[in-house]
Image 1 (spheres, one colour):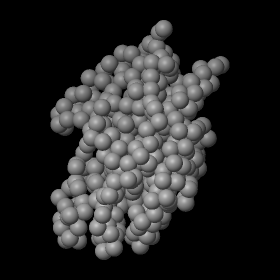
Image 2 (cartoon, rainbow, N blue to C red; image 1 turned 90 degrees about the horizontal axis):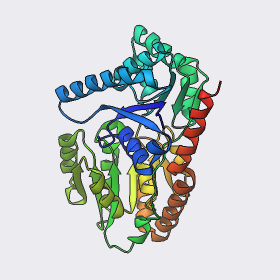
Image 3 (cartoon, rainbow, N blue to C red; image 1 turned 135 degrees about the horizontal axis):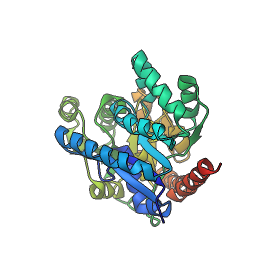
Length: 355
């Protein structure tokens, strides 16, 4: 069958949330089932390698655009959008059906800080899109207010669950509790709030460890750990590939994500698919994922005392961990299975191709 849908985004084995989403598309067979031609425009490497990879992809996409009907572009903010706006503009010029799939929680801030010329550029591209996909319900109003558009649909991130694997419940007989953090080691992710909370937790508990997976301000985080004297409780793994992340999740009991900015965090879905209760902040689409007190806890960003309290509540109550872990699995399997994404995208593609 001739492929009339082109999807553009990062290489599926690259680092980052969008790549994780794309990887799920490949694992689940979504790309094949919907007859999508996938073109990667970004791949990890040196600056020169990234530029060459992008330029080669741009040439390949420009040629292929003549053969397709729908151009579906996964983008975020800042240079992600600037880079991909070239491809979106080509699609608009060639009168293709354009879908902008917006990821990340920083778009509103990016738009507000952009120059007047860039604001006009962003607005023009979004208004010329056939549909804009966002990940959470709150983003619909954000884009309406910023860009005065109404062709926005919500398709949340999803996860491929090949079999029932509730490791977070099954491994709860271990003596040492593993707290997991998956994300960039930067302030906006709340990493320093988490370390402050761990200091407080360590004054009451000693049967735990915090496993940090991510890159960013590695040395600064390490210095903070040393200054708080919590090194014995913290393991820093840096960025981890899929296999190591799977091993970490399989050994985990609680996932903590105290971010200040998010869209629809994949790490919450990944943990919940293992039957792990989560603690997250009330930002972006987190409330679409976490039912406070049911499959995890939601706190205000920056509230170290509340973060400490919720961590301690789960650490000392095994029955609560098990109950929330079970609810986590049920929520993600019923609401955020990638099969639902396949159905939603199929309907979307069909609707925009229908005269």
